Amino acid sequence: MKKSICLMAAVLFMAAGQVFGAPWTNFTDGGTYNINYLANNWVRLDYQTPGMQTTVNMLDGGSIGFYLATYQNSQANIYGGYVYNLAANDSSKVTMSGGSVGDSLYAHDSSQVTISGGSVAHGLSADNSSQVTMSGGSVELLYANDSSHVNWSGGIIAFDSYPIMLDGQAILTIIGSDFAINGNPFGYGEITSILGGGYSGESLRTLTGTLANGDIINNQFQIGDYASITLVPEPATLLLLGLGAVIARSKR
Image 1 (cartoon, one colour):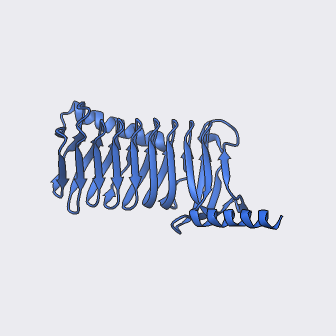
Image 2: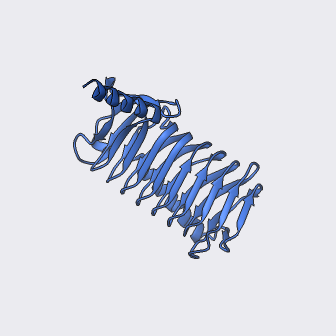
Image 3: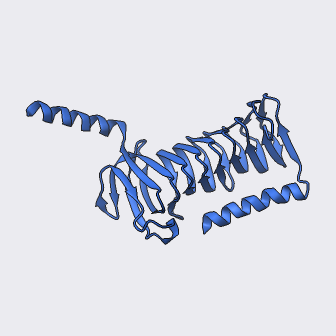
């Protein structure tokens, strides 16, 4: 329900901008642009101009008060500053190592999003075979759907507010150690839906553990349809497991 409202608001917001003639700034020439100023409008990269591979860098002091939208293999690098909403489309790339997104970050259409720092004040939504890698930073809400894949090894997701929600054939891979579900040690492997329907009909479960970078997990989650969470040992634990197996074989 929360995700549906969030996406509906985004669609209506962008449609309103087109209907009422909101000012768009279009970067479509394959160049690199640094935004360290107030851009109180809508910014699009390579909209309807495939193959240009335009890049925008958000820097300290920069601000986009409405939307930053990437298309057609373009790239946005968020090093600092502020973006109200950020949408990655059409196999474009977004990297975020600082700064903040005031509302939501949307990953669509086989786009790639990498988050190592900064904050997303509301939701991260991944769908249409998009790829998200998160090793730091913070996101309040995560929704993944439509064969999207999220890799999580560090940072905070769904902090104190909302469960992680997975639907369709989405996969959330979590790299860490000491995992438990509802207080019961789980080890490693796949977690799937209980009832096999949509995520909203699932009971809330709680996953705890430690991520690869040392951040603590304490998140409720709901998994629907054919989606799954895959728990993977972080490298140090994987090495110890491997050494243990070698020692066991040697003793035999």
